Length: 228
Image (tube, rainbow, N blue to C red):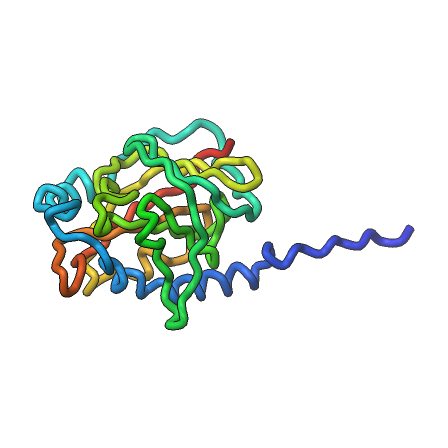
């Protein structure tokens, strides 16, 4: 009997592809913090002192131990583009648009004329895939609060639900929330590779000025805990 030939893995599941994608992700996304704030309104809208205090307080940046679900961790999902993004505890339910890189090799931002839209970096993992997936959204625009106006108020252990084009939903549990100054933004901590499926959600934070925009970024760290 002739030996059975092993089927060739799809290109997007090879180790070389994943390593290349991770390297590209870390390289090109280090500039996202410097771009945040363009076209945003000032402290009179979503960037006032109360919002800054909430973003930087101990409840926002501290870690909390969540009750681990019973059974083994969920298996990573195959690639499928995201279609909707939900944070039930914040009443966020938004459509998702793919973001790429502009001519300067910097991550694009969602259009300011659609402030309720969440952007997903299409060069990284899709919902539920292994690795570090990136979602971004505006905190506010010239017309008022945007999709992630209250992102700094999400609590550890809360769920983030991302629906996919194949009909499945990736459920992430929030691990922690951090606020980083742009000047000292920790690229590797935020965008570094991960073996399990993880998610980073970013928006603007800190103080605002019309000349330079926001001083900080709010970053939510989460990991995949279930699929449906």
